[in-house]
Amino acid sequence: MFKLARSRPFASVLRAATDARPALQQKRNLSIHEYLSANILKSYGIGVPQGSVARTPEEAEKVAKSLEGDDMVIKAQVLAGGRGKGTFDNGFKGGVRVIYSPTEARILADQMIGHKLITKQTGAAGRLCNAVYIVERKFARREFYLAVLMDRSSQGPVIIASSQGGMDIETVAKENPDAIITTQVDIHKGVTDEMARDIATRLGFSEQCIEDAKDTIQKLYKVFMEKDATQIEINPLSETTDHKVLAMDAKLNFDDNAEFRQEEIFSFRDTTQEDADEVKAAQHGLNFIKLDGDIGCLVNGAGLAMATMDIIKLNGGQPANFLDVGGGATPEAIKQAFDLITSDPKVTAIFVNIFGGIVRCDAIAKGLISVVQSMNLRTPVVARLQGTNMEQAHKLINESGLKIFSIDDLQNAAEKAVQFSKVVKMARDIDVGVEFTLGI
Image 1: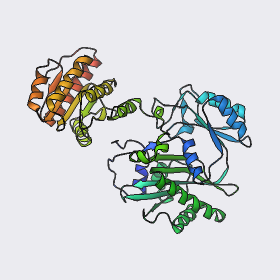
Image 2 (image 1 turned 120 degrees about the vertical axis):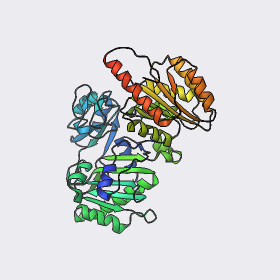
Image 3 (image 1 turned 90 degrees about the vertical axis):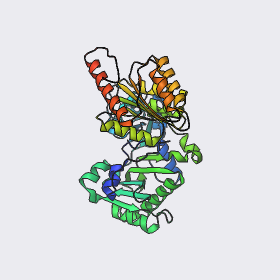
Image 4 (image 1 turned 135 degrees about the vertical axis):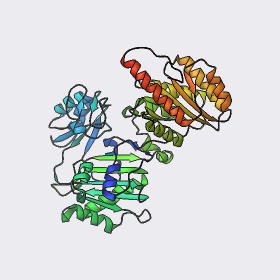
């Protein structure tokens, strides 16, 4: 499944650390909750704080009672960074809180579970918290950052480490790049004892923890390889006051292409943490990503979709989405695509750019006309259909009597879509209706 690289994970860090040239790249990864990541690490013998997940306030109290001592941390299980500084939609502040009793665990869980947590990464909509993770609180003598990533510039794994753990790694990369240690890994040799020991020593682990830290780094790389991960981030990786090496927080992402051999991992997917429209699109075999613009795009083929978004921007417009309906572009796919596009109230025009190779353009035109009629769509649609039977398609659209405008030239079509969008926005601003012709 094609996805745009629009999320945070470490593109900026890798560029700062490896001087890689920034580029728009495909992004394929499944993200899982922290408690699941901790369970995976634990299964590989990696040290993590003791704890368990709770899905109700009563369960949270029970989990807290099962932990030794009264010093604990409760963490909202939301797939976003910045949880500690986040605010819930009920006004409760902090998605990561220190607690001192089972009763406090129950009270705070009640404030978190069932509410949306808003952080710097979620946007104003926030993300729903369905569970909390309660762990023993461990005190660290030193905190480090360590991540295993796939680096496209070197076409292999890379270990990014920093002595400044517990901090935003992008800030460290920007303000103190010398604090970041970058180690490329030969995929045929893996992480050798010498390499892991060198990383542990340069990070600043105390002498009695070097071997433990070396083993942890090697085990993290083993998880990365065996589980088809695209990212393993431990922040912080801590040396505790009793000289144990523990992964205090873990974020793991996995390659979507490996789903066929990582069935258990992909069973952990939590669709409540994903955009509902993107989940719906995937169910219908569509590759859809919502963007911030106002011109809806319906295209077949990822390359053509990228080119379509580029030419809209070159003409002064902003695409509202990336939407690849695939090679077939069947009437049903077009219907689902229009449902997704028109569900966005910002959309003021729709640009359909289809190459009719596998399917005929006249069949696409019939499907397009049928969808616009059934939806009673008033948003102007610019259609550029190229390929088999495109003349018949052009004739069908022009004779439909609908607000679908068939334009053969890509530049002219993009230009017209941007013009239509601007006119609709102006009409909305002054609350008047508008009729469209190609000569607006």
